[in-house]
Amino acid sequence: MKCAMLYAPGRLEIEEVEIPNIKKGEVLVKVRAALTCGTDIKTYMRGHPVLIKKYPSPFGHEFSGVISKVGTDVKGFFPGMRVVAANSAPCGQCYFCKKGYVNLCEDLRLLNGAYAKYIVVPERIVNKNLLEIPDYISFKDAALSEPLACCLNAVEQSDISSNDTVAVIGSGPIGLFLTHLYHLSGAKVIACGKGKQRLELAKILGADFTINADEIEDEIGAVKSLSNYGRGADVVVEAVGKPDIWEMSVKMARRGGLVILFGGCPSGTSFSIDTSLIHYEQITIKGIFHYTPQLFKRALDLIASGKINTKAFISGRLPLEKLEEAFSLVKQKKGVKYFIDPFYQ
Image (cartoon, rainbow, N blue to C red; front, side, top):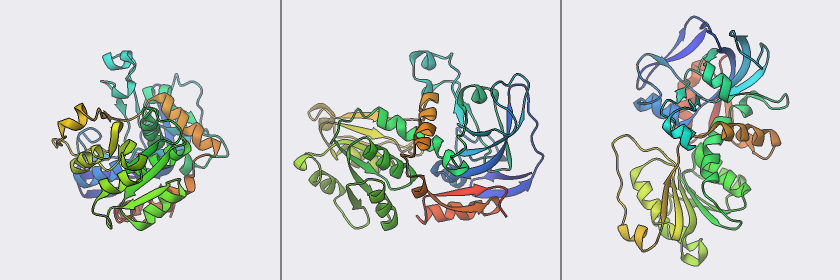
């Protein structure tokens, strides 16, 4: 089968490899849609200490497809079933799982290799995070479940009330998902980012106001002027993953407001905070990472309900051989996500 193999940051090869065998409890899925993701692009550019432990390695993690084979002891799944799989599953037994923080599992089982014609879904993911896709949902739409689940985690932990003002920093796929979800939750949304096309899309997805970082020097002042009569946003969500943007996001919140740091920064980086903002302004800062099996199911259910504007997120279809081209288009802000079809010629 064809498979994208990452040999080192920036070095990607499309190779012919053997279709993998499955073991007890595993499922072999014929990949019908694999989506480009910011994490995969970062992995391609600079590596990833969690997702890629050694080279060469297959990669890609947002996908859906059709079950080709099932291993012994697999229950509830059979060949021909349309499915979507999460890229992880918690153990359920470690300290954090027992505390209810399953997204922080100390033995989180991860899955890579979606940029290929076939992928093996491990037993733990089969048992906890493999879902059947309704017949009326396309493969490419179902594959949006994983990033949507991550964003649902942020929205769920925001504790927003109707008419709260939420400032979302970042106009990439995650920022756009967050904009859409906060709008659906009843918030007034200010979308801050770069790229006129992305910001126009943010309006379509529910942004009440947009701020183009390429055109405005004082983003903090711009957000505050649109929030609570100049006091600042009730909730600020950083979805870029840069320390300087983390610092800026804290200054956009009102007194007693919430700042959610969603974007992952490079390892070893740090940021500074004016202590008065934490003490005298009583601002709460919260990190958000990953999702839970419950949120993954909710994401698919939300897509199935028709409430998510899935068309806004899929910018085109490309064959596996053009994966690097798809990454380049996203980096240039030409589109949001691309649907990689390993069987498309």
